[in-house]
Length: 501
Image (cartoon, rainbow, N blue to C red; front, side, top):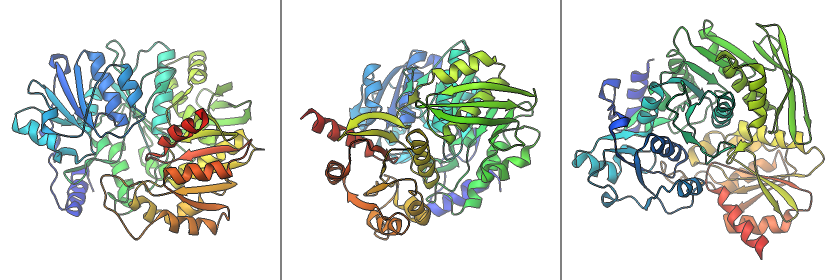
């Protein structure tokens, strides 16, 4: 099944036809001639990174979004990018040269898009603009359920450290120590981005976002069933990844995580381009001698082609999965010709990014970290990473499920994913704007099921009740991981206000 057939198939399930069924319908703009761009949904992590990228080109940026506080508010204010609250046709100035819309807030069907079209203002989706930006340079796209953001961030720091002046758009609040999640560099050859398998505009343009990209290098982390609201089964998910890998040119590379069986089941069909990494003995770049020491991960990589071991690589990230992420970035850098010293220096220079095992400070005597983990596999990996760094500490997991559809489809997997935690708290499900309330699934039911695998699991409800639960249950010396793709990170505003008192 090709992408157009899949698009048509998914479109019928939404009850609508896609707005752009073929690439020839996609608008292309000369960014060097554009003076003003409006971004609808500007506070989304990807949209904020894109706003910074366009601002670097010299474009005047405006935007609109909901009143809710996002992790991107800080960087937008720092860059003096203002936004209007709420979506309205009054938000779009008549002299706007281009309107960019996110997949959220109705996507191509929102009121600002409709107004722009009525006034003859060109409209592009986030995915279309990302593809055009990527198409102007040699693109490295990172795909998979987990690791897209981390690897893209690490690789941006590695290339920057090597003096390669990378351009990048990464869907995260910030990248440390770069200080921005999006950047345009005129003189650099490379563009780094996440290659997302979610659709361009749900119900209107159902092609996967990454179907528009033409990457030279693709990094594939772990292929899992993550979007049950879009793909009816796991086979459909693997089909779109297969189509994406087919876009890699003959002189390009598919860098695949050999430790993930699903990834390799798809990647094995692309042997001419395939470069593998992981802990497996037969891979091209094998991770070995891993140890955790003083909140650092230290390891070596055996380069099979060069028959050489790169010793004593250090990263400021916990867990086996982050060692794999760093190795993926190392492989990409090596294939781009970066020397060993610069690669090791770049990996150690990386200090993390927003909502990826982010150190949030001390509350109630416990050390708190915040993570975007929202899939069972990511939860398992994040909790294991915490145990690796803090083996003698009590581990507390606070999780906010994201979307009814994902929680229902992966219900049993979620229930089993908290085995590493000594104490588990489940918040109410955070509903996505793209779905309706489902009375057939709840965090209360998930807590009951989770108790069969971890007896110390509790349903805690909303933010206010969660903070109260924390106050009563967190002990001095605990390590607490808050996880989820919704608004769980807002809980730190409440925790900080309590600590001030």
